Length: 545
Image 1 (cartoon, rainbow, N blue to C red):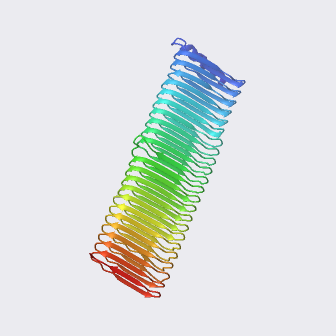
Image 2 (tube, rainbow, N blue to C red; image 1 turned 45 degrees about the vertical axis):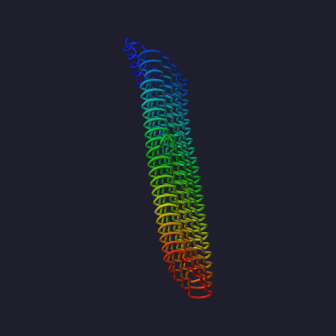
Image 3 (cartoon, one colour; image 1 turned 120 degrees about the vertical axis):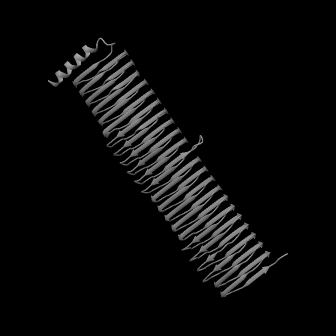
C-alpha cells in the first residue's frame, strides 16, 4: 500500500509541474535488476530517484539551470554516477553492499552531500566553481575511499569515515574560502592527504584506530593552519608543508611504532609561524621542523623513546625552539636558528647515545641544554653574535663532552657534568663581557679548558674528585681573573695564561701528581697557588713592560 501511495504522489507531482518550464524526473524502482539513467538538458532540472534492492545502478546527467538530484539506493550493488553542469546540488544516500558515488558538478552554487552506510564504499566528487561544499560520510565501513576536488570559491570539505577497514580520504581545493576537515575513526589502512592552495586555508585531520597511518597536508597561501592527530599506532607518518602568511601547524601521533613527522613552513615571506609536534609512544621517532621567516617558534616533544631525533631549523625574527625527549635510546637534537630573538632549550632525559647540537647566529641568543641519564653524552653550542648565554648540564655521565663557543657581545657560559667518566669541556668566547664556569664533579678522564680573548674576562674550573685531571684557562685581554681548583686527586695539572690587563689567578690542587704553571704578562698581576699533597711543582711568571 505504501508503495502505491508513493507512486501516485510522484505521478501527481509530475502532472503539476509539467507546465513550469520543463525538466523534472522521478524514478522509483523496488526489487531485483534495478538500473536507471536520466538525462535532462535545460531549465528547471530536478530528479529524485529511489531504487530499493539488488543490482542498483543509476546514471544521471543534467545540463543547465536549477540542477538538483536526490537519490537513495538501499541494497546490493549500488552505484550512482552523476554529472550536473550549471547551478548544481546533489544528495545521495546509499545503504548497503558495493556502494559507489561518482559525481562531477561544474558551476555556481555547488553542494554535494553523500552518505554511504556499508561495504565496498567509494565516493569521488569533483566540483569546479563558486559556492563549493562537499560533505561525505561513509559510516560503518569496509572498503572506504573518498576523494573530493574543488576548484574555486567558498570551498569546504568534511569527510568522516567512521568504522574501519581500508580508509583513505583525499581532498584538494584550490582557491578562496578553503577549509577541510577529515576524521577517520576506526582504523586499518588509514591515510589522509589533503592539499589546499590559496586564501582561507585550514585543515584538521584526525585518525583514531591505528595501523598503517599516514597524513599529509600541504597548504600554499594566506590564513594557513593545520592540525593532524593520529592516535592508534603502527607505521605513523605525518608531513605538513605550509608556505605563506598566518602559518601554524600541529602534528601529534600518540600510539607508537614507526613515528616520523616533518613540518615545513617556508617561503613567500611565511609569517606568524608556529609549529609543534608531539609523538608519545615511541619507536623509530624522528621530528624535523623547518621554518623560515617571521614570528617563529617550534616545539617538538617525543616521550617514549628508541631511535629519537629532532632536527629543528628556523631562519628569521622571533625564533624560539624547545625540544624534549624522554625515554631514550639513540637521542639527538640538532637545531640551528639564524636571526633575531633566538632561544633554545633542549632536554634529553633517560639517555643512551645522547647528543645536542645548537647553533644560533644573531641577536638575543640563549641556550640551555640538559642531558640527564647518561651514556655517550655530548652537547655543543655555538652562538655567534649579540646577547649570548649558554648553559649545558649533563648528569649521570659516561662519554661526556660539552663544548660552547660564543663569539661577540654579552657572553656567559656554564658547563656542569656530574657523574662523569670521560669528561672534556671547553668554553671558548671571543669578545665583550665574557664569563665562563666549568664544573665537573666525580671525574675520570677529565680535562676542562676555557679560552676567552677580549673584554671583561673571568673564568672558573672546578674538577672535584679529579682523576686524570688537567685544567687550563687562557685569557688574552681586559678584565681577566681566573680560578682553577682540582680536588682529591690523581694526575692534576693546571695551566693558566693571561696576557694583558687586570690579571689575577688562583689555583689550588689537593692531591696526587700536582703541577701548576701560571704566566701573566701585562698589568695588575696577582697570583696565588696552593698544592697540598704528592708530586707538587709550581712555576709562576709575571711580567710588565
